[in-house]
Image (tube, rainbow, N blue to C red; front, side):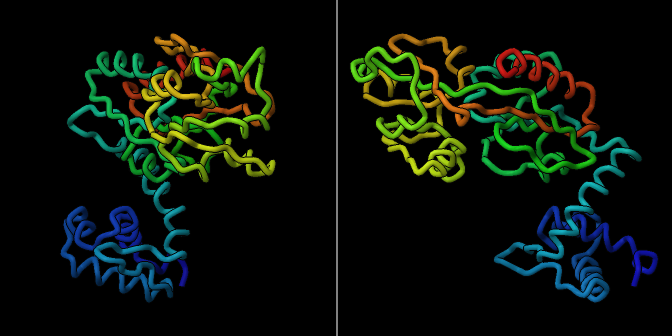
Length: 300
């Protein structure tokens, strides 16, 4: 069989199934009966010689073959929808952004200002160290701002590396004697301290910890949380060290008793990038442009 012999309506059903993971939700979204969706999937399985999904609880989990199809179908349908119909047009203006907690102090003022100007609801979603490509393509989020590696490209997404900055070490009054007259801290010296860890992802997903592991090093975490607002009180009251991006410290309003030293080594450099749909409406692009300008002043 070739593509000219396949009923392309079946691919539309497969596309929605890959997004919903549910026969009933697919039927509802396409205004079909559940039996019609099941029949279509049976025809697809026969035509493609693959089961396509396996049931896990109430979810239909795609097979490896179906996941590969998803890589091609989701961008294709999203692109066609945008080219032919201009994408989704929700009644309410909602701008959903995913960003690491360290960027909150930098971007919250601009997000609030731009959201008010656009008469939109700003929704900040919890950041996770993973790919957000599908959520962007499927319009579940509007903007991803993240640090780390280059992301997988798609024709319907705009990827942009904004710039880079360096990590620094922050500490409070109880570590001043131990720091002595240091003007910087070497990468390997991180092993000598107890650390404050304020990321909403595990150590195994943290790039600094990966770099330490590659060098045969590790660091002892003595305070673990996902909220940067806890950092300053913790450093003031315990002999803890925190490794944070330099822009976060520079924009900290309350730095009383908090000291900062540069962290030496290439491992201390980090990049920030953003991704969004190329077809985003102008009002969303104006919000993105404002955030980009703020980031560019700190990440060069």
